[in-house]
Image 1: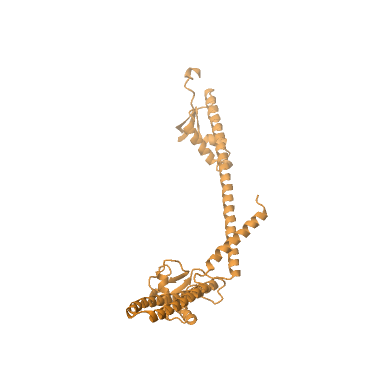
Image 2: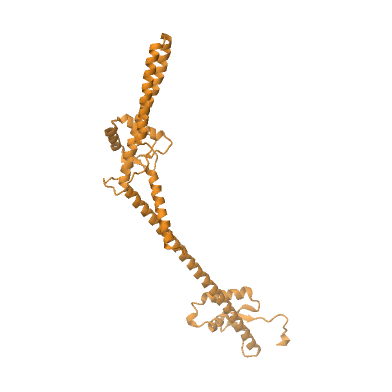
Length: 322
């Protein structure tokens, strides 16, 4: 038997594991520090480009300056692309946090009375516009990036039918977070509930298997008892048929055979015949296929056809010995 301390320790470890597993889903993919680092990086890159342009304009020849203008244009294009990427990441960061918080609130008591974890796209767009000041075009660009991304960014775009995937931005109806952000108490209570439910299911399954094993053992014991009762019944039938044949040889019986139902009524009392029916049927079947000394025949007795048993003497006995 496992001690109660071991069971309690295993339960605590399981709850801690569940809590850690739930906590993994609450780390955002776009942290605010990442956005700040990217902004600082782009700012430094812009300053370096300005200094480089100024130095080259002061020292270069006209031909050199013509070649430099093309290079400067390429650099400016790259700079603008990086700027757009920074704005896109900022929108995604705020959108991820908003959806994660809303989904967490919905999972933890729903204090805002949300109808669903899936936030309407208009409401999400208004929130992003208020927080970041981004236009609807940038918001749609962020949704387009999510659709084109092959990675799970933690933001699910859903249309009218949630079971079907969305391919274009205009078909997006609502946005849902794939990683709800919950408080510590909520995560702990959910992990505890999950652990208790799992333990109860485990013990229920264990109880079911234990009951099934007991039932199978009972069934096996009943089959063994029934088989033993069948063999005992076969012995009694053989003795009755043989005694009847001996009595016939001594002219104490009119016929050398005896009716099967007569033997049954002799061996089994009326109150036990229904309960012993299966044992009796198996004994009759066993005699028909395994006992060569008893022969089953059909005779007319008292104007009715009935099955009878006749004792068959071994072949080395002759009629003169009777």
